[in-house]
Image 1 (cartoon, rainbow, N blue to C red):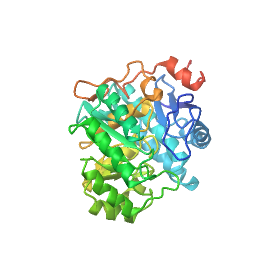
Image 2: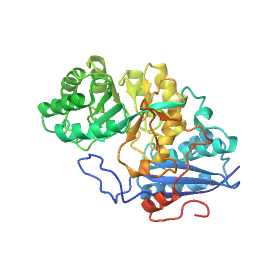
Image 3: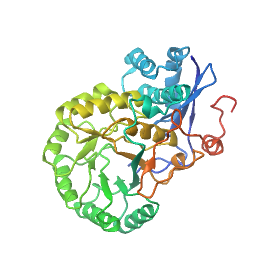
Image 4: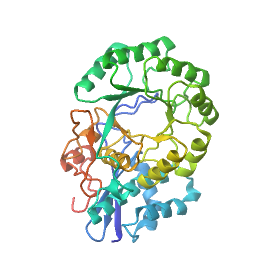
Length: 379
């Protein structure tokens, strides 16, 4: 089975707020879908966390390396793409685009063999996983109301991030966390994401340590991105002294770049994003490395439905990955599939068990957010 073509299409019109200091708009494209098309009629789907302009530019470089390749060898093909494009810079748009290609190739392999991707990644440790509702922070009262509405949908784990946190005062930060814990009660997981990868993040080690001590009083499960994303030494010191687990790594790409952070013990929880880091192939390798250093992998997933499906399969194939991120209120996640995501009575999400990624797209919804641009065979 050979690769015949690859196409990309961007999602626009309902792009959710990111909480960034330079905020994105609904018409901005930050998620791009890719389709890898084979000569035997099997098409694989992938998702890339970057704009369609950058993906298309990257495909102009990658396409000649990809066409004619064996579509049933995702890890080898993805590694070929990495190795052959090193001179363009490892970790930027090329790597992000390879991520979507890699996910699509795993989807093809699953469809061709009749197996769910998680089984092909090494086996299914679980058939369901707990999603944590991911939402932006707000002032205490409206945030508490928002959390209660999401809790009523069945979620039992929550991560709130960005917004005013770390940007106004310590008193407001604590008021936000207190109101959130009071609203959710003691039995729900609560995570805090400072958003240290935001442009010109102003806070350093001493702020992060003081804030971590405050978060421990409210039984926060982890403190995410409390520092600038390249502050390795501060992350090491913070992890050693903080009374809550420290997580990060969403902006790092490729397994080689993660290794110094894992070896140095900078994280309790490492959070590669499969749609940026190099796909499922790289995510799995990072998960294996993390396990060797006693670090859990919980994937970053500010995502589309295709990206969520990839994360679910990754979670099924790694023994300690028992949570996945679920961005709330995004049509790109909720509307793009025929069978909408459903939580069970325990707030768990079933991992698809059909071949490949195991999802079927709602093509009407896809057309709404892509302007009807053709990107699949006979579409």
